[in-house]
Amino acid sequence: MGTWDYSIFWKETLNQFKNELSEQEFTMWFNMDYETSGESSIILSVPSGFYRDQVKQRYQARIETKLFELSGQHIFVDFEVKTRKKEESQGQNEPARKESPEAGNPKVLNPNPQHVEVHAKEREPHSLLRKDYTFNNFIIGENNSFAANAAIAIAKNPGTAYNPCLIYGGVGLGKTHLMQAIGNMAWQEKGIKIIYITAENFTNEFVESIKNGKTQDFKNKYRNSDMLLIDDIHFLQKKIETQEELFHTFNALYDANKQIIFTCDRPVSELKNLSERLRSRFERGLNVDLQPPSYETRCAILAKKTEARGINIPPEVLNLVAKNISSNVRDLEASLTKLIAYAELTKRPVTLEIAQQQLRDSFGAPKQNNVTIETIQKVVAEYFSLSYTDLKGKKRTKAVSFPRQLAMYIAREITEYSTTELGMEFGGRDHTTVMHGCQKIEERLKAEPSLETTIQKLNKLIKDYNS
Ligand code: ADP
Ligand code: MG
Image 1 (cartoon, rainbow, N blue to C red):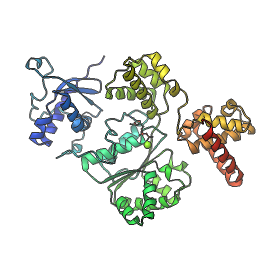
Image 2 (cartoon, protein in one colour):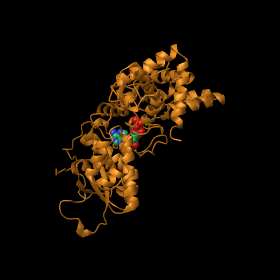
Image 3 (cartoon, protein in one colour):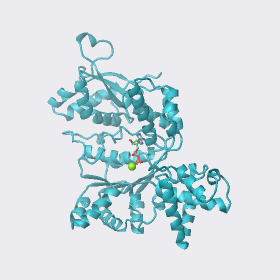
Image 4 (cartoon, rainbow, N blue to C red):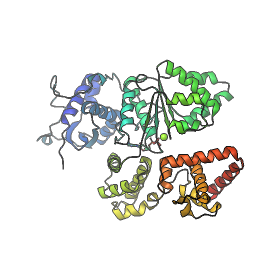
């Protein structure tokens, strides 16, 4: 296939580390030799397994960040253990370290030299952030490139250009990953005070602080951060007092030019039971969305993830998974994990047949909260003495359209599906149809309180459906 040679970027990476680290640290850990390049990776050889594990943990992310900065593309690093003997260093693969970077090494492309910051010391991983949620581990496709580029810009210049920023999109599309990648990069590069918290925990902490008479501590903690990341703000719907508190936290941080980032499972305009002034704060700044990945991007994600786990799964199997699981990245990963577990437990290669058989369930309807859309549709259809196919189908008579809207409304309330995903589950309808349906039910709820009882009954039936 193609030939790749990223050795020039590796050389410059080494060059930079040499300048940034103490001589002792550099000599101790950068005992790695460039071996070869793949499509988006380089392979470095190291002298032992222990060494490899240490280097991975200490430097892999930083090396990949540099390679990204230097080359403008994601180049991943793989380590290969190679016991070095004299006679091995021959041919083109000369150990990179020995040809110590020539002074100046002029041709190296560094698109943004001012971005390459000097790290005197490596920072410990941030205790509130997942180490693996980095930009390097985030595959950029057409579905997320705008959001990802905005995210990188924010990580590099927090509090300036895009403040606040709201990342929204359906479940499992990478909101949390991207948000934490911003935190991880800002932490590594700037060491600023970063708080990551889910809206749910923010709420719980706030309630707890009221109970314990410690609200001032709570306020101080959040208002003193340099970067506040609040995940899943749709959880704040109906939480009036927490909304109020967040509103004031927002203003304090915003006025001090501190970066604020939110994620939400839908556009802010679709949030219900939210104070108007908080809504207007969320809408200020930059709102970016994550879309489901295309087939090509899904393939790229699967390829990267299998590689990262060091497992060999044939491409036709990965293509099968990518073809069948289109809703989100989390489901893709779950399928992959299942196949890897199978391969490891049975010590057999994963064939197409085995993949098909193992993933039969996932290839059907995806499950959320243990409640599937199918269950909701069946229960609602039965309740109104309709057939399941009619409920999902195209008919638009009153007898079916009301139950259908009700099913959409309930699905919106109790699952994490986005309106787009729900539209697909309801006979390939557009997401605006789902929004419209839910709105109709909301209007009726205001006029007709007895409908609430019906919904409660249905919810109970849905809950009990599988038990
Ligand atoms: P969300 O917060 O939107 O529900 P997450 O950020 O939790 O989704 O992502 C779900 C899983 O999918 C995580 O393991 C995450 O690392 C992975 N993931 C999502 N998007 C990508 C991507 N573009 N590249 C690589 N992994 C991704
Ligand atoms: Mg999330």
